[in-house]
Image (cartoon, rainbow, N blue to C red):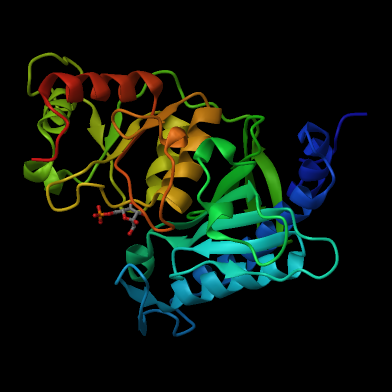
Length: 339
Ligand code: P6P
């Protein structure tokens, strides 16, 4: 019998449960709890301008960045939802200096979650798309409390990763290693409907995303690639379009759908770049690789990096395989050291 409506997130998760090599339902429950938290944050994001949530919460996060009130709300919402799930043994959040261990009574929880609860928060007050990014690992520790080692696993070890984009519509996009699927929220009934099944990044792209303002500080190879994208070096008769929102989730979601490359390179001031490995680059790399794309540091696959610190950063070149490899070739030819 053909379906009379699109499948919703919870139904999809249960149906796909058979895809998990260790299908026992805990990961499904965890993904559902993330979906619940996303709906709550979506409600607050959508009324941010009205609920006196705009502006700063008066505190700084571990990055030394002024926390926005929505940052705090999103962080607390996801932490509370993950705590009640009973499936999560611990959390590493961009907003918290150290890991949050959850002492789960009874059967020990199997998973830990690394997250950026509200990515792109500098865009909150100007009503530009922002997002949540999450990464799920099987815990390695045998008993509570969880340890840093549970989180300092290579991105290749992720069992699931996803993002929520709070934009013109709110979407949840995730992978468990069997392709990438996107769900759009119908706020009138509070359900995420499967709207983008089996997302694949287009094989060709003509969008490049980078904060061009940093050009003079970029490695020579990045400068050469940007010149190529703009047709300045005479080797590209169809110059690309520059699109840069300043929210990693928004820039990557557009490139995932339309094709393109996103670059946040190293600079002399920031030799490891700006974006965090655990809860920005690894989950996005897992998603883009599952969608047929590629994500590297300009040299090494992001998913193969061995993390040593919770909040460590890495340069990232992510998007169409062809575009990433063209950028890598120019880094080799012209130099990838930060100038
Ligand atoms: P810049 C947002 O603060 C963020 O962490 C990412 O979402 C975004 O891609 C990047 O920083 C933007 O950084 O230096 O271009 O403002």
